[in-house]
Image (cartoon, rainbow, N blue to C red; front, side, top):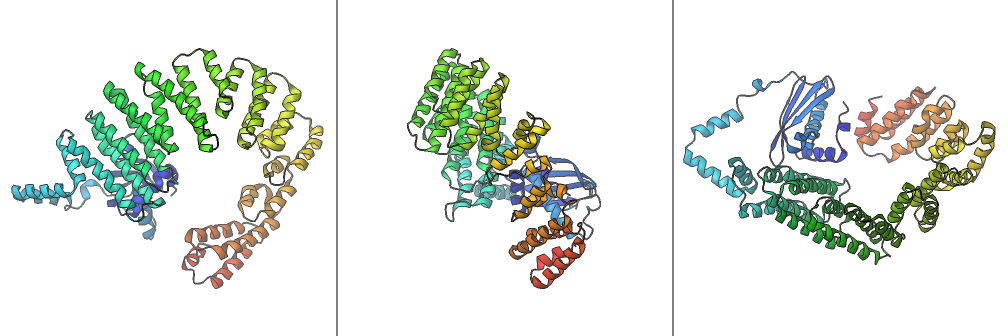
Length: 559
């Protein structure tokens, strides 16, 4: 059953983290229905409906799922389900289990136990539990509908501090796996505690707790390879947009002041991108407009003064564009905007904006001149040069300058976008079939040796050249990509290539997923003429040579 593709990779990682921590409980599996409880900041009930091996519906009562998203709690249950199915001999779901068929113990016994207990004992026990566990105390106060007190706000912050301390107490730095779990727990805070604050219209408290999380996350060194900080910042900004839609002007001023202060002092450009967006888009009152104009101008100038750093160059471009957006939103005359652009043409993004406005206003010659200048100014950035060339090529074609258009297209094919199939086909379409036979050889003779030309060979049906490139590649990814068009013509050559590479892979393999990949390659080899015998020969040799690798022996049994 292939269910992982239903989830974003970051959600999948966090679901795996929940599963590995043993947070899936009360798991019940029937023919068409799976039920389970997942422990987060609260208990969340998950229901997954099946038709055969196909998932037809998933439900969870967490706030994330209630917004229509597939959540980490669902993923955690599916990881648990996968383990359950692997332990069953038939690998199938069991007999249907309904709610009425649950054990008569559990919650019902607990309820009965509480009813029969002395009220004073229950009161004292509950008080002691809530005294020791601040998270439970917060949940209990929410159930009772209590207002949020100053003590509650400090308690929430202590809970945030405890989350960070739990993961950073060893060396200070948080590695990838623990960072995923940390982000998950902080998202739980946003999804539960902050969401409750919004429901009760406690907008100031929701802002204070969210900003506290962002400040803590910026201070914490961690491996954020999966982009969890961006996810968290995005959720935080969604909360702030909701606050801005409903709060009073005084709180808007406080939020605006925080955003400005953060952007003046932060070194974290990733979170800053989100904060910049809300600063520009989220404050529309008159008193904020003039400050946004002066602040964006000031920030752009500040970054421009530090031309030696790439990040400062990026910051100058970003803030200059934001300044232009503010000018547009505030109805500045087009001449003033153009004047600002011309004063900042050394910034690539400003140049790009101004070129687009020139094309829109049919100032074609000025746009062409700026595009040529841009190619020279950004010569150390191949991606930018290619982008400028593409715009120039399309503009020259649009205004009918055919000779210049063809010249730019040749530059793209041979240099700026070398190996790009669509650009290659655009050039090809300009020639007759007879003319192209000569022109394409010019292309292949002038292309650099490090350019990937396999797609071009495939387009021209140069299968002998394509085979040569596939065989010269030390790995199998090119063979896999072009196997379908080469297999019928060169079966023996491809089989030999598989044999040579799979032997090297076997020597280096050390994990079950790698052994599984090796077996899948052998299965591919079996489909070639003589491949059945060759795959068996290789597998038999591995059984002797690597007999101590139990996981490999298990995988080989799949052949």
